[in-house]
Structures are given as C-alpha cells and as structure tokens.
Image 1 (cartoon, rainbow, N blue to C red):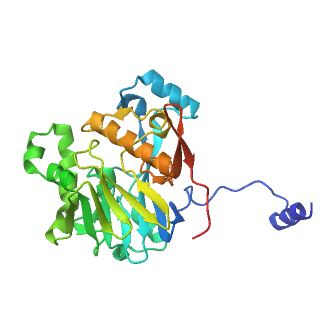
Image 2 (cartoon, rainbow, N blue to C red):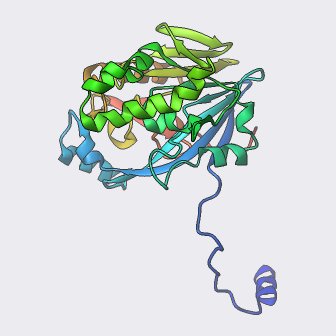
Length: 312
C-alpha cells in the first residue's frame, strides 16, 4: 500500500501507462560462459518463413499440427542469430547475419555487436557455416569489409561452389542471387588475402575451436564446436531450421537443402552426439538467443532452452 501511494503521489494519481517513446525491443545480445570461453549471442533480426510450404519429407498437415502444439502458426517469425566467442586470446564470430541483403527487419548485427560492448575491428576471425546470404551477408558494408581486421573462414567445398562463375552461369535464375551475394560479400576479403578455406572433415582452427564438416544443406556446410573445462557448445548454422518440427523428427528437410538426404543424415548424427554428451547447441534460426540442450524423446528429441544467467 505504501508503494502504491508513492506511485500515485509521483504521477498525480494517473496510473495509466504511457506508450514507450520508441516501440522496439531491447538490444539483441545475450552473454554466457562455456568453461572459460565467453559466448555472446547476437540477433540480426527476424523474418517470416512459410514453413508449411518449405519443409519437405513431411506433409503440410503434419507441419501445422506440430506448430499448433507449440502455439505457433505458419508463417513463423524466425530469428537470424550469430554468435561471438571470446576464447581469451581470439575473438571469433560465427556467421554474420544478413547485412543489407534481406530487408528492413534484419541487418541489426553490427548494432547489437556494439551494444554488447565489442567493436567490429576487434574481431579476429569469422567462421561462416555456409554461404547463404543470411549467414554471410553481414561481413561487408558497401564494398568495404565490415570487420577490417578479420580473416574469413568457411568450408572449402562451399567456396568452390558459390564462388564459381561456371556454377553461377548454369544455376537457375532464382539461384543466381545466392552466387552474386557470396561473391560480392567475400570480394574485399579475397582481395586482401583474408579468405582462408577450411580443408578437412574435423579441423582445429584455434585452440578449443573446431570446424566439423556437415555437408548437405550446402556442399560445404560446416558446424563449429567450442570446448573449455569440459563444457562444449556446437554452432549449428542451418543444420536445422524449425525447432517445433525437426527436433521431434530430424528426418524432416527443407527446400533450401542442396542434398536433403545428406542434410538429414548430418542432422541425425549431430543430434545424437549432442544429446549423448549434453552439449549446448547454438542455433541460427531458433528463437533468440537460440541456445539450449536437447534430450532424446521418443524417436526424436526435445529442446530445452538454456537457463537464463547473469554470470559473465
């Protein structure tokens, strides 16, 4: 009662809430520790995906039933997440958001990076899971590197595919934009000899950080793992897209996959490993911050979001 009286006195008795000056969410960053490593999730923004039309190896009816059970409906407002890892000696970013490639609801990564307390010039290396525009688009602003001191790394097979003029020439017209985007974004880094392809199925890039080939979604799709003091986190890129559907049924694929059978096999292998080891997963298209665990449940898995922490 005393607290209420104080509010009434300071507001002149008017308890009606006023509208915020700017209707927006708080800055999109979230920080946690994995062993001694610091991980900062960065939100690039959201886009709506008509997943009942995009998911494959499943019927639209089954997709919609799974969405309804999770209080969702298609199109789903889908997060685009990237992640920053401070190992203590290196500052590594995993994926880079969309930049200006995909519209006004996206392209917020640099703003959120700065809000989190870091500057683009501090980033040492950027690891790209694959060269689709929502993962690669943020590395360049205009024709200049957005991260002037960073080396870009990605799976060798992805670069060989997306950076090939011959592949672009024979691609369907709708796909040519994917090729042009990758080639434009990487151009200033390649000119500065700062694009270094990753060659190998399981490669340590810096101490405690590994690249793991998971080809299928794209020819060189790569996930990344970090490990410190017995704790482990996997950064999945587009190994999966729709939590409500693909965790319970990892065999479900998506039209964006270049090889859907390989993509499903890679997903099943990684999910089984993560569940068995209790690894954190950091996922590009799960609701921000996109970090949690999975546990085996029936023929699939259940997603358990990471407990919120203020320990940094």
